[in-house]
Image (cartoon, rainbow, N blue to C red; front, side, top):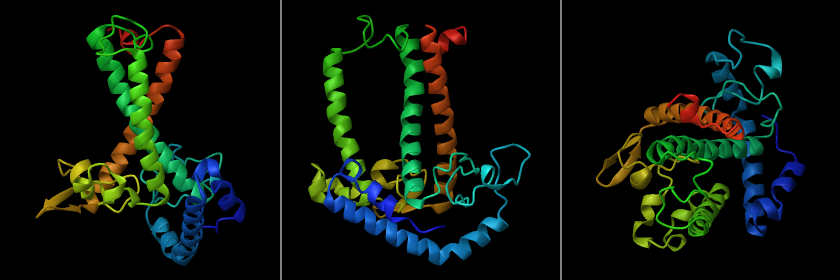
Length: 258
């Protein structure tokens, strides 16, 4: 994996992306350190990729250069089928950022798809009219809903943003208003974007609780990560279709004849 260029460090270190000098310093150190580490373990990762037959995003095609099997995608990411025709993930720093964005957008899309179906089935109001229709079931006004959403989402997203550049920094007591339970928000799995732990994995799908300590199960976690990214991509495509349908005044339930 090629070393990160100074231009990339400078580009990602702008105030707009990093939010301050301390964050830019953290990002620069992480990128440089990650590049050195990647260069050190590159031979081993290449051997593993050569042994494991990675699936291709084009059915029946197993080779064909960077269009089908880009050299910067080594199969280590869940759901990696070599799809990067624009070369967006050539740089390791950008690849990590794009995967974070894909994961978050996919999770929102999965929640949105369920909400669209359930909301219309319950109220009978199309999802793209629910915000302005007085018949939509809502305990408060649209303005109150919008303000509350911006406030809560802004707080949560700011925490996620800081944690991306400085993992586990938001699990300390001073970073949360519930200091006594801050330990529940620690990145117990050790994987960025997959916190797990007693709070984010209460049913122990990807780990077990032993004497109050969360112990992740690597095999279960890997299977769930692959399943989640597949469902996330499907949900994002579904939302794209919903938008096209809405432009024609149609709804998902209407398109299904329900």
